[in-house]
Amino acid sequence: DTEVTQTPKHLVMGMTNKKSLKCEQHMGHRAMYWYKQKAKKPPELMFVYSYEKLSINESVPSRFSPECPNSSLLNLHLHALQPEDSALYLCASSQGDRGLSPLHFGNGTRLTVT
Amino acid sequence: GQNIDQPTEMTATEGAIVQINCTYQTSGFNGLFWYQQHAGEAPTFLSYNVLDGLEEKGRFSSFLSRSKGYSYLLLKELQMKDSASYLCAYLNAGNNRKLIWGLGTSLGVNP
Image 1 (cartoon, rainbow over the protein chains, first blue to last red):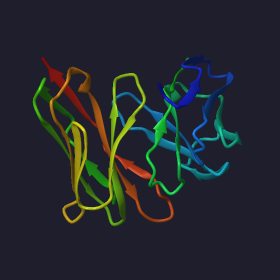
Image 2: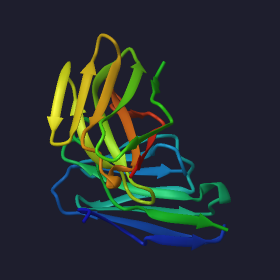
Image 3: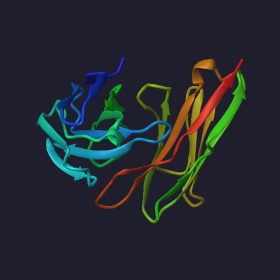
Image 4: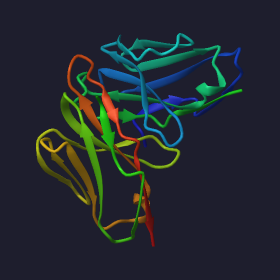
């Protein structure tokens, strides 16, 4: 069982929809991440939150909007996505925020944009 | 530059030993991670090497040589459930401490 919980597991949305992905961890980790993963590719970093503040934005288009309401929760708000945004979206957390701690991944949300 | 390479695919037989190599080139290095990812699932952490040498964890071991820019993951007593993708990633030093990922090695274990 993963200690990082993501909902929903699957999501199909149209290009005009607005939806949100949710992530929760109760391990007391201080850093939380959003990754995007395409088939047969490694995870691609999108955002990093450190102590509830956005510390890294990997030049992600504004149609992806992250939010960290508290130290246990991380959301990713989606609006006006494109079909090429279809992918597995992975949330992860780590104990420290310096990159030296292993990442604990959730099982992901498989997103399809139609 | 930030280059990291690992073989695309490997196959091995149940009960055997397999070594998955990973080479990297970077001007700033702060450790190397190995993750396992089964199809349709999330990556799970296997090992972390920051100093030269071998780290052993049960059936899995990981080796690092910083001077050669080289790491390997050694899997012993292979089981069918070890069929998965194995991703190496090094931690880039500097202000933006992000992981640089290899493309992954897809390991198939045959009976």
